[in-house]
Length: 203
Image (cartoon, rainbow, N blue to C red; front, side, top):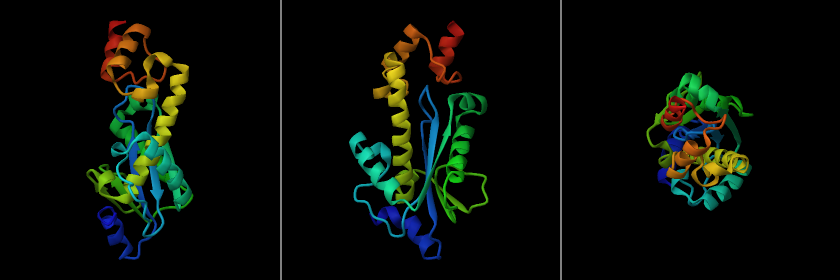
């Protein structure tokens, strides 16, 4: 736990307490939105086992999500849909999602710890490569964003069962790509993404 609190501790030592961790999920899927979370944890917060959401089981993420949204000083979610992703590209859409997440917080952060991205904001920030496995605040944001997006994909699976969204969460698995060939695409597919673009060009 100590290792994951290095960045936060440095800021706390300078008297900065409202530190927001920011991360996103959903850059790679062929369908659905990109979702970002910005979260401020209590000072010296500890949650045993919390790390990058990709390293946690679905059950563990759900468990941590419930604890984190209850314990957080403040958190915000940013959601940018597939149409906007196609319009501006996924890199720009990710930044928009992160900025929306910050804007949707009830408390404005004093400092941002961001996973890999640089944001145009008036709040001082640090962009950390692989931040979700180096900062507790970013790890918390990654878990919240992941659970929010996964729940959206589970709802989408009920509407479009052929694509197996409940298991692939919109990522380009073999089953998903075969379903596109057989059933076409939904209004929520990203038209600028390889397999979807290829389908549209063929049809």
